[in-house]
Amino acid sequence: MAINPVNTREPVLNQDKIWGRFNCLYDDQSIPVTFRSWPVREGYVTSVNYDDYTCNVMSYGAMYERVRCVSPWFSFSHGHGINFCPESNSWVLMSKGPLRTDPWFIVGFIPIEQLKESMDESDSYYRNNKPEMTEGDIHISTDSGNFIFIQKSSHAIRIENTPACFIDMQSSNNYIHIGCQNILLQTKAGMITMRSAEPELIENEEGKTKAKPVDVCTTGFFRSSTSDYENFLKIDVGKVKLNNQDVPDNTILALNICNKVGIIIDTDGNIKTYTSGKRTIMSDGDTTIASKSSVCFKSGSSVKIDASADIISNSGNSITEQSGVIINSAGKIEHSVGSGSPETSAPYPSIPDNRNNVQNCPFVIKHLI
Image (cartoon, one colour):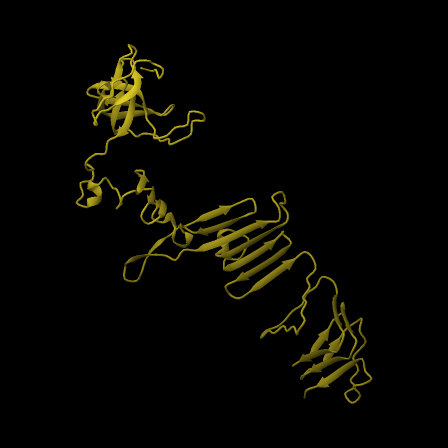
C-alpha cells in the first residue's frame, strides 16, 4: 500500500457513514482503497516475543507470528509514547492493509463478557473488575491489583499498588494523601524515612487473632551541601532500635550532629548527651538544676566555677571539695552544712571553724543544727 497525495485523479467520496474512505489513498494499481478492502479478524495471543514485544497470534487455525500492536500514540523521533507489553491468552482484533504482503497489526484488545474463572454474582466480575466509573473517567490496571484511576467528575487521581500503599490527589484544597507502611523521601538536600516493622498476628486470651502493635521509626538526614559528607544532622524518633542498633532498646529519640554532638533519650526518662567540643549554657535569667536524686559532675581535668557575686553551697549533710576544683568569686563563698561537717582537700587550705566571725574568713560556714 502506498500513500500518493499528489495523484491527480480525484477520488470519489464514499457517502457510506459506516465505512467511509481515506481520501488520496490508493493501492499499487492506483485504485482507491476503502475500509471494505481491509481484512479484520479475531484471534488470541499464544505468546509474547520479549525482544521486540510482538505477539504470536492464533486466528481461525492459522498462526501469525511477530504481530505488532498499534499504540494510541508513538513518537517516531525518539520512540517514546504509550507503550505496553501484551499478555498471553489475550483476545485481540487484527487488521492489515488490502495487499497480500501488508503486515498484520493488533488494532485492539477485546474485553470478554465475563470472567470465566471467576463466576461471581457480584457485578464487578461481570464488568471485568472495572470500578464504578462515570463519563470521562479513566482506569488503568493490571492483574496484580495495582491501578491508576483518573476521575473527571471528582477531579481526583488515585494511584494504588495495594490497599495499604496508595496516593490520593484531590483538587479540593490541593490535597494529597499518601498511605503506606514504609516511605523514603530522598533529595540532594537530605533524606526522610518512615519505617515500621513487619506486622505480626497474636492470639488474645479468648483465642482470637489480632494484630500485634508494630514498632515504628522516623529518620531525618540533612546536609549543608551536596558535596559535604561530614557536616550533617541525623534525627531518629520512635523505635530508634529499628534504624540504629548501637542505642539501647528503649531509645525513643536520638540526635547526631556531624558525629560530634549526640543526644539520646529513652522511654524511662533518661537523657544522655555528648559533645566533642565545648558546651556552653547561656541564660539572661536564673538557671536551676533540680534533681530529687544525686547530681554528679565528672571531669577528666579540672572543674572551674566563676561567679561575679556570691557562691552559696547548701547541703543537708556534708560538703567535700577535692583537688582539681577551682572556685572564683567576686563576692563571698558560703557553705551551709546540715548535720555533717565541711571537708576539703588540697590545693585549698582547711576551712576554719569561725562561726562567730563570718566576715573575715575566706569560707563562711553555717551549721544548721
